Length: 199
Image (cartoon, rainbow, N blue to C red; front, side, top):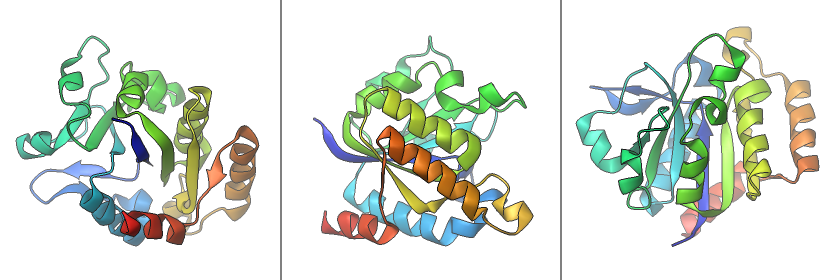
């Protein structure tokens, strides 16, 4: 069955077993309040939502695995496909080395594109941290795969926003313009919230 909307969170959360299933690290602090609000509402409507998590980070607990699909980096591991379409939360593992290419989830995870096909959404709504690398990579790759893409400007920040103490608005706007030229559509946070609540 095709999903109307699927949500793609790029690098905003970390898995922290024993406390909460996902937690906002320091890099996400400028938008953490909005992230938890949107997570809670998405969970309520069972819309597919996908999180990137880094390789060798905390793995999902057994309890979490019952609710989620863990999509590993290893392209030979297809066990995850048995649960695709049956659950609504997806953890998409990515690389974690200092090599820029390894951080890009569609480059490091050989199952990533198959996961996008399995979710089969009419439109992807993207937000996250790492505007200038990881978010740009995800939006560009989804468009290259002929997917309809929307992004939430209020929920996208540059990599060093928390460390620098400010969000780089000029940099944000340059990427927003680039994505619109590629065919992605901006979607206001309030509009997304209304859309979710309507469901």
